[in-house]
Image (tube, rainbow, N blue to C red):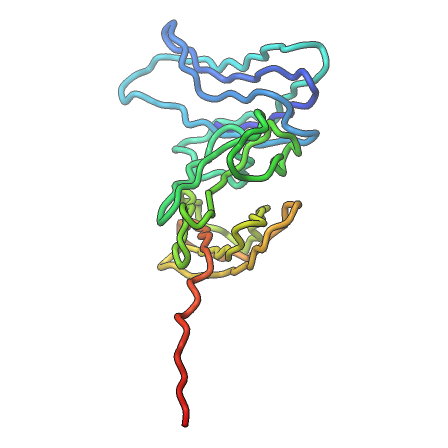
Length: 236
């Protein structure tokens, strides 16, 4: 199941999706709060029991949190097969199937309380403290020099033609490092390397992707290696 939604306003409440079958409801998806003045695509896999001919209903529910805001839905479609990794992910609803690895642990967070231990004060999608993003602690204690914290996507469907992958990234002023992006299809190939020295703004990254088979994208954030030990010199 795929659909597009639009949630915008200071009192937007919650949009919820559920499936009703044989009198029972199963929660599939939900989103709360403003998501910016733009459309977003969402996906949900509908479970099917072999041999079952039970009919089902899909329920979209808007739960109001005030009077200032609008909800909209468009292009609802049901197609056979499980959902592939989404072509767009804002991390507002979930981690979109990204999995952490290596040294350090990526996590999904928002800074709504204003007391996040690390990470930017707002996300890029909604430009608010309620917006979510993926973040990893790059302090020397959590990510020693020479180590890498990786984040890998679920499998994407093969591409019929070359595509452009874009993303926004934000470095730490206190712990600069390098962001390397890899394409995993018939092996693992580095396609992009960005030196991130921190700052107060999100930065745009992009790369070309060509994949005739199922593929994944992996990002690795690494602290610079430790400096070489000093060498003693002696001369006569």
